[in-house]
Amino acid sequence: MQFRLRRSLAERGWAGFAASLLTDPRLIFRRDPDAAPLKPFAPRHPFDAQHGVETGGILFPEDLSTGKPGDLCNNGYFGIAPSVFRQICDRLAIDYRAFTFVDLGSGKGRALLLASEFPFRAIVGVELSPRLHRAAMENVAHYRPPAQRCTNILCVEGDAAEYRLPAGPLVLYMWNAFEGPVFEKVVTALEDSLQRDPREVYVVYVHPELDRRLAGSPCFRRLWFSEIEMSEEDYQAYAFPPHAEVCTVYRSVTGETPGRT
Image (tube, rainbow, N blue to C red; front, side):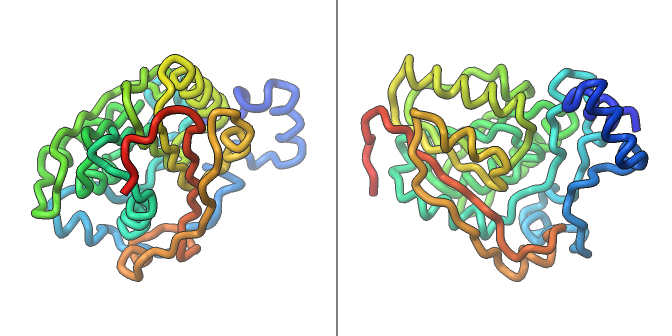
């Protein structure tokens, strides 16, 4: 309940918070009144069982409190469906060898592991929660499938809003990990980075609740916005009713193209 109070106050201010309580006094007693109901799902994802890692489960924002300001914008953790991630990367149709893959809000690192199936130049995960960061490091250390094509993987414990993006072409990935204030800082930092170093950058945004900010940026143009169907295996381990994940992809309008395939 303490987390809900702090988050609601940060988002609404005292006047808005008081008004919301008058409308619905139960607000502070449930985790997220706007969240979709969960469905029954497999306790362990087949991906984890196959590779001896632990990237599954669902964690709510209050489960991941660190005492840092970024907590108030934390959306919790749930890993992307592997079948969806692979379709997204295939659809990018880029020369992966020229790009660094960066996951902002990388959680337990499932997207990092999946990205390593593609020959990226490097892979970086940035995670605020020490608990999730430790899990990601353990998963990266144990993940060695025959299909792995990139082993240059770095896990960074830190705030996505303060992370300095690497130079060179990027694939920047986000799975709706944080709320508006952090998202605004992330996009602003990305725009500033492109002004300093014009280059090819793709933004992959899954569950794009704040897509309007990217759509309004002069630094990007939208390539596509799609519902991507997941495999039945993934759906059995998926906590939410839809059989697809929504994804939008943007490309920077500045910079050279280092070689599309």
